[in-house]
Amino acid sequence: MPEKSIPQTEEVYRYVLEHGHNRDPIRQQIEQENAKLAGWLPCMQTAAEEATLLGLLVRTIGAKSALEVGTFTGYSSLIVARALPPDGHLLCCDVNEQWTSIAKRYWEQAGVADKITLKLGPALATLKALPASTVFDFSFIDANKDDYCAYYEEALKHTRPNGLILIDNVLWSGRIFDRADQDRETIGVREINELVARDTRVEAVMLPFADGLTIARKK
Image (cartoon, rainbow, N blue to C red):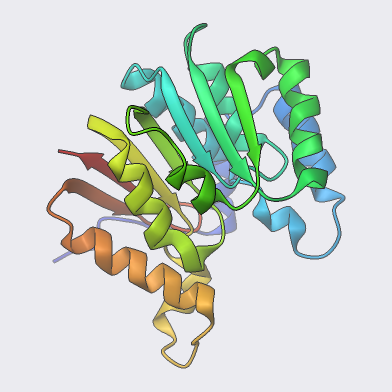
């Protein structure tokens, strides 16, 4: 069967970015601030084209309630919150007060802070404490990978029929293919991929996009 995709070269990637609506002044400010963070931290930012897709999907399904597990400096949450209607709400879960203080500054600047509730602390505890009546239309999971399966189960429990759950980093820079790599987070990515692939509660697609993105629709 002939290949249906072309290699993701630097030229292709730059072309994709230049021909998508991935830029605006506030997003560029966050990108520039993240780029100055030490070590590997800039890599924690959601890819620009992926963040744009999040906003498109939020608007497409008419989401009013959203969840983000793993907020970092607020790049993806800013875009999701912008895509929600004026009475929409986004619950953000993170453990790092320093990084999320940057997020809060940009939420205020973008005029979306009133749509967002930030819960600092272990996300799994936050999710397990949610009332049974809490329902999300859209969820984005992008936190520590060793808890991905647990995050997914909790998000799915609170997702409405036809709601979406997006899971980031499902290709994990190719580390999932190296069976000698037994790091807890690598194992966590393998486990969530196997779980979703066999989960009859959802219809799902894995996209070779950014670092790999799974989109699951609850049936």
